[in-house]
Amino acid sequence: MKSILGISAFYHDSAACILVDGKIVAAAQEERFTRKKHDPDYPHNAINFVLKYAKLKLSEVDQIVFFEKPFLKFERLLETYVAFAPKGFVSFAKAMPLWIKEKLFQKNLLFNKLKEHDQNYKSDKNIFFSDHHLSHAASAFFPSPFDEAVVLTADGVGEWATTTVAVGKNENLEIKKEIHFPHSLGLLYSAFTYYTGFKVNSGEYKLMGLAPYGTPIYEDKVKQLLDLKDDGTFRLDQKYFNYATGLTMTNEKFNNLFGQKPRNPQYDKITQFHMDIAASIQKVTEEIMINLAKSIRKEYGISNLCLAGGVALNCVANGKILKEKVFENIWIQPAAGDAGGSLGAALALWHIDQGNKRIVDLNDDMKGSYLGTEYNQEEIERELKDAGANFETLNYEELIDKTTEFLSNEKAIGWFQGRMEFGPRALGGRSILGDPRSEKMQKNLNLKVKYRESFRPFAPSVLRENLPEWFEMNVDSPYMLLVANINPNKKIEMNEEQKNLFGIDKLNVKRSDIPAVTHVDYSARIQTVTKNTNSRYYDLISKFKEKTGCPIIINTSFNVRGEPIVNTPKDAFNCFMGTELDYLVIGDCILDKSKQDPNLKKDYTKEFELD
Image (cartoon, rainbow, N blue to C red):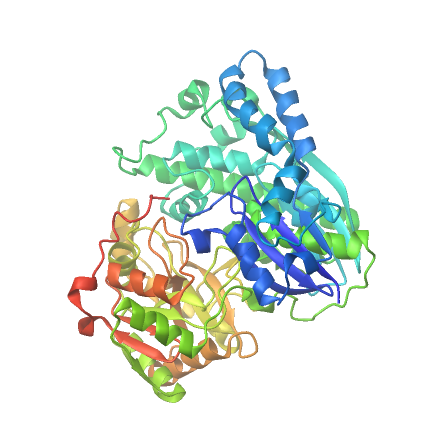
């Protein structure tokens, strides 16, 4: 038995993963344990978890691999500061002490941290380093259901690369082309995230969700920021940006081009201007991704595409690539960001460096991305009792029946079952559920449960066999990474008066038979559910369909704004008591909010730093 521990850390979304004989056994992000969103620190808790799940001590692990190469990253920082000197001196002075003290000598830092897990871990000779973008590409190709694929990765920046094209065949994977820093689609999108007043590295989802409320009237101005070729390759004009050397993403020249200063989220409301800006950058991002996809399809003649890197979480762009039928098949790594780098680094070491044969799983090798912690019934009941919870334990049929009854009566439900998901999306393991037919559910869940902006869309979880009846799509989407339109026969067209409403006012207009999961442009971010990946969740949606005729439920992550997805039964109870959730269904237990001790209620509105 051979084992590999993969680690990503020290930038954002640190995580750990373990392979045993090339199979993914466990993976988790550190944020779930520390309750600090996008936690970048050394993933002490995540490593402890994956080792425990694999029943291994650290000294028994064969190899340990880190997801990027610190010396190359340092070289890029130094060269960037030299190229832009003397402009970047302030950020240079801030960055260097940390690099010289810790980050540059990461092998030593890692060894000292790893020793804390196991006093018998004595040598750093089994620590390896992968390339950042190779880690991303490996995380996308090796678990995919393809024996051959082109792999497109796009993010902010790794060591030097920001966008790469790789070709994978069986156990071989090779990067063929790269776009280098400072030319970065991820950083371009993050610049607009910053400009519209959202937090870089976490608010990109909001920018994407805001885009359909606007019109892309600034598309030409966005294109002034870059030299864009027909094949999708690009260069960014650095005179508009500040990220290479400064402490902000954009500068005065950028502000003057668009006519406003960046939105201050504390004081400035979101206006039509911000919606139009969001629509414009989203349209340009989609164009770049589609053109890149078309050019690599033409060049390599391979019909399968894999995607990873933070930009691969732009499910709207992914949906457009699918709709354009550029490739016959698309597979996207569910932990597409840096957390997934821990997995990719381990897989790259196993297949590329060690030449181990790859066995392709026709579904994929991610086990539905249910790779995190799990709790048995006894552990759940013990944690609930310790927290002072009032609960009843039901048999399986009763549990499913009661939960669907509550859903059909427009109740908001916390759902905690099986293993926790790896990656940013809740997929029916740690989810908040609701009735998609309800006209008030989207607003209520956003404002009363999630404590976040009312415009944020929710995803539908749909039985795979019923997908084509409801949406203009007929491919698997188990990880909620593809957007498609509602079927025309389920739509309710807006009248002229409704079309002319100010952006967010359109929220209150019923646009389909499932208004709570229909975005203002009639699209939805879809999760397909099958019996073989999550049987309990499948049974729940099937029972809901039996009761209502609707094979769909709302699925959003079990957390409030700024909080990581819940990990333990105690986290779930705390979130339940800090929000206006009506019921909590956890293992075989059901908790009714009205039956809980009111003294246990928490003020969750200020509990977490806003994202």
